[in-house]
Image 1 (cartoon, helix red, strand yellow):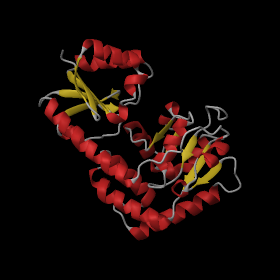
Image 2: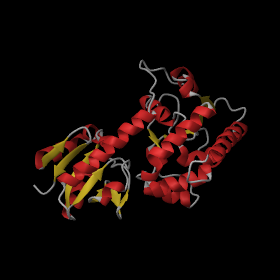
Image 3: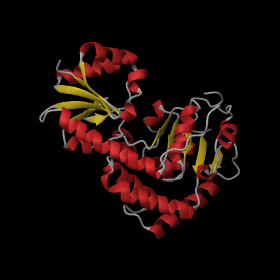
Length: 308
């Protein structure tokens, strides 16, 4: 990263449906390794304990969306010199968008236990309530502006929905503007497409993997527990059955794959949010292609039979 030191972090403080996914994508395109809505078990456990020096920030320089929104004051002290970006949106449009998201997604959220915890912390409710959400949005906006007042080098407000993009973000981060359009992600129709792809992936797993078999699921902790209702899945990497984050290198990934195979895993499935693994962990990919049969490869899943 050009100007930020590794001790500095970038925190997105915007609530749901304010362009948080677009911001996370933009930060990654600028070379700032950023995670959107971290929902892994380690982060969950740390937040429940009030522990804000987070393990996820050992491997990432940026975090965006509501899991860390209530804790900006603590994060400011633990990670001095960090940058804070508040994404905002016209409140009437925001309320309509959140209500649509809740009706489409909340009741089948793959990380429901974690999301319930986060929503209780941020919104004070597990159901959409227009008056409560309006109050929380306005209160969060006031409190954030008050806390970070007179710190223009540390604090930026962006209205991505209204057209803010590289011209605001890059000078704030002291980075050159990239020669590509600013990303606009996670619109409602994209959410609907994601859900349709998710449903088809569950059908693929149910059809392909025989009952009673265990499979390794590589999904960057994005698909959650609903797949486990059709077949037993193991996250990758894992410790005591819980997702443990990314492998540091190919050797670790290959070693863990073999360990789980010896423990009885019959298949490994890469879901589309983790397709990038097959490029980044190229030795793992070559190992799989050379030793095991690829039994499915489509826009949703790439699956190898570990029994062969």
